Length: 82
Image (cartoon, rainbow, N blue to C red):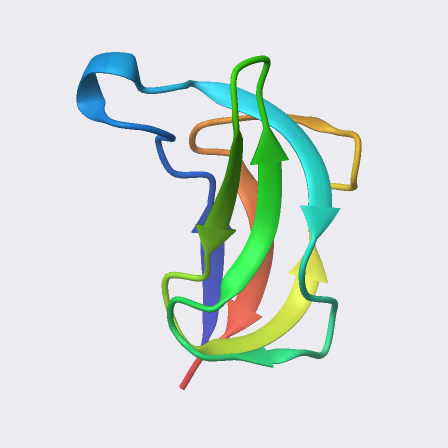
């Protein structure tokens, strides 16, 4: 089954950031990841955030490239999960 990994809200509720730039992918297509493994680094004008994968699975597709701007809710990649 396929699962879309979306950019979550970054930061706490009072100062939640609505988006940023893809600085670095920490995994690639074909990699198998456990839940909570580091997936991608997002930078904003104030901070850098590492986004973990929400579920265990294998990366089927990456939808955004390093240097792309992303917003909360954008699909970052697609996992194959059991």
